[in-house]
Image 1 (cartoon, one colour):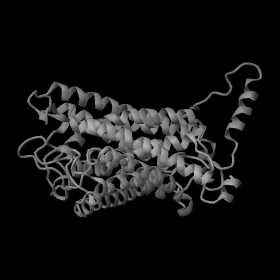
Image 2 (tube, rainbow, N blue to C red; image 1 turned 30 degrees about the vertical axis):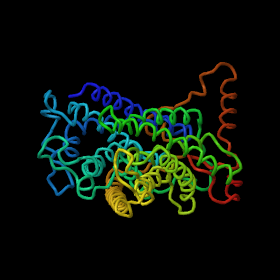
Image 3 (tube, rainbow, N blue to C red; image 1 turned 45 degrees about the vertical axis):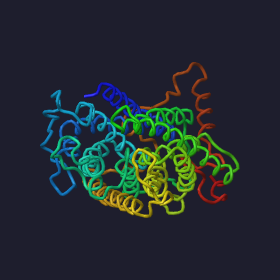
Image 4 (cartoon, rainbow, N blue to C red; image 1 turned 135 degrees about the vertical axis):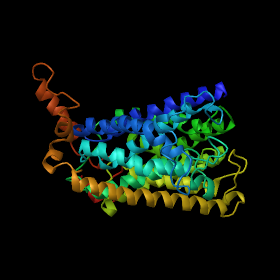
Length: 458
């Protein structure tokens, strides 16, 4: 055991844990005021449910010895984390429980990310059921595919097929986290259907400072996400840290340039969204590219994701907070981009197409990305339909219009009646002004719907 490596992994786990409350703020600010508590509760409840499952059997399904040809770990190997408190139980140079904690927070935020696609309209108890089922049948197996390398917990350990047989590179979760969550978000958005008024009413973020705070916390925590995936205080961690900073900064610039050219003005919402797009894209590639490659990867991610968020208006699916446009598109670009921009001078020591490596790594990245996308999408559709047709997933239309916070939690995020004389009228006036539609922005983290006419109508 190395104490420095252990300290870094535990610190990184705490940083990644902070990302889920950060996501709650980010998503919470992006919805309308009548939905903010429900939106935040979806993230916090994912933290609670997934943690319990991870301790009971999730870690074992992800990192138990393979029992199905690289598809899933043995859920009985570490049931209830049995045997992992032994001082001699190590993963690389850190105690097994440090690794358990680090991987737990990955599972948590992957589930929480999905919630943004179904904001405003998903009932809370069915969401809890979905969280438990999806983590069990989708995330835990995919984590085994991607993160469980042969020999990681012992000489005879057999891991997942993407890591060991396909040998696609995913340093910190481009496939297992972002493509996985993005595909699931698209599937659930299709199953639940569009919000009432989608494409006709402005559904603007109610609190942009909250969005910016959330984006800042995500960027801060993401250094643990990426650099912590080195599972040690080493050159992998240092390269991942610098690449994470570089790609994210470039993505912000790319997104804002798109907004300036297309809309005539850069926005704070665009900057926050660009941060997340860059973080998503560099996640799988953090140890595969050099800093200049990270800048290119991030810049392209900012441009692609800024353009992709408008697809929901053209194609008619209601991805409320652009999980598809940012996480699915950004995750696909970051994962496939490794096959183009990877360089053997980086710690992963693989050359991509642009560095003379041919298409060998590129096809591996494409196969891994498509496999996870397809698996996640199909199973999420089945899970979503099963819940919808049994206990009901979608909130009643009347309650959706009134506000999901009151309907599902009997609470309101903002008390507009607590001020003194005349306060109600004043607060109501401010609320009306704050929620009045404005030209050029139709809501969530996306730009206006594709045509200027639609934006003007909004």
